[in-house]
Length: 158
Image (cartoon, rainbow, N blue to C red; front, side, top):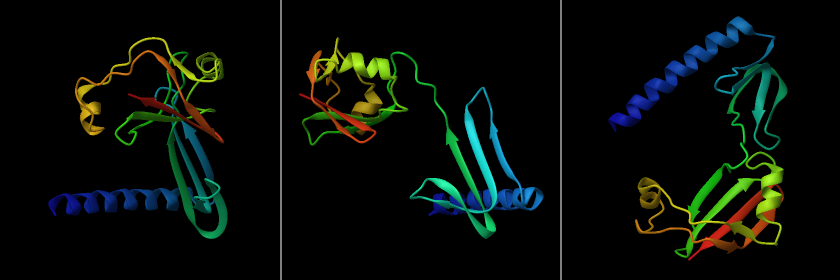
């Protein structure tokens, strides 16, 4: 219960700071990106956040604040979500547009399957959170993958 009270206090302080920000900057649109961290903050007065379009839309009162983290995708990195695959291994889901370089994706899937050229190891904390044995490794080889719009899911099964 203490944690909930602490979270509530923190949320109230954040809301207060944001409301001050709204008052100071009313009727302006602000977009700030810091180069070092690539954190993008979008503040739009007289707007609201629309989850369907994932954007700020106009309205008569209030404001819309959206914060996102822009992570540059390097040659050999894939950014996505890793989950347990029904006790059969793990699955990796990522954005084809922003989670992997297009050249890397084309190279890894040129045979029609996702190619893993060497053994894949996972951290102990990750294995525990996925409820996999600490000895679990991804074997080199070819793995099935599915495309669903922008999302790619690779199935690393045992």
